[in-house]
Image (cartoon, rainbow, N blue to C red):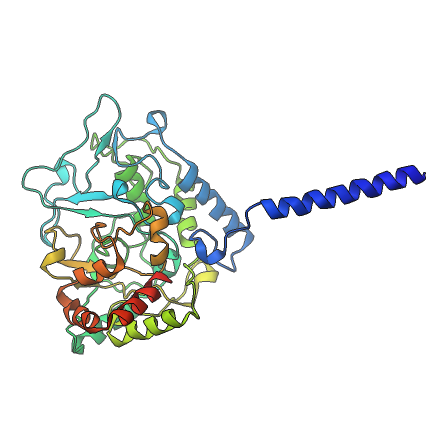
Length: 400
């Protein structure tokens, strides 16, 4: 009896020592602000389960020829272009072509609007047709998108109205575009001339996350759905290659990814840089706060958040004019890019920054200095800051 007791104690002690040793050698869990992945707080059990299904479809479902890939395509999965839910790298950059003004894309019968630069064996990848202008689009981070989707049109229009008298010459405006028949407008929509205010994409030409998801399956992977049955190669309608439930799960996944969390918020340089960000009027376009209205996902309703964008398109000058556009935006106009998650961009971009719409800027300072057009006065103020002040402003941006 005594021997059994001592053996049991020894076994328990050994187990505790083993657990303790595991704690010292196992890596600690990542800090939440170092990850883009994660759920919005306050979801129901059903929403959390659907988020997980969408996560699996987005990141783990890799398409092949037997499951509908292509035959011409850009990537084989959603996650290929958004590693860790982050920004895309140069090798995942998309090419759009065929629209040089606001009168519509004239190369839809020649493969537009997106170049499918890869193909299955026996097929030939697309090439940009002669005479078509083009632009490269680096995939964005995908977290916090549900909050952006839930911002009412009225708030975005208010930002545009406030620009009318801006002394720095900021004149951002919404991009109104035609939406596909499968998209049901939100109750907050304020259409103009049969077009709807859009907010997603480099040109803010995409209406909502269903619109974005269906386009991505079709144009990026060559996958048809009940929403978009036209095959990108044959240009004819074929049976859906992805289940409707899967598309809906991915939409909910995108809607319920948490907003990026700022790091080092109390660091004196970050605090000083945030003040400078406002004083030079970067916040004139990269607005520090937006507010959602009603959302069918209660956890997203009536929330104030900080993506640092106004969701408007702005003239960025001739240096960023690629002579390609979408919707009502001019060729030199680009949506104010949300800056949240900026400091984490190198994690998914091969250890370096690839910023602006096509990844041409390889540092935050370089991206700032490439701003032109409506941002010219703000850039001049940045240049007049002392080197120490410039580094403080960049420290704030790196903390996002």
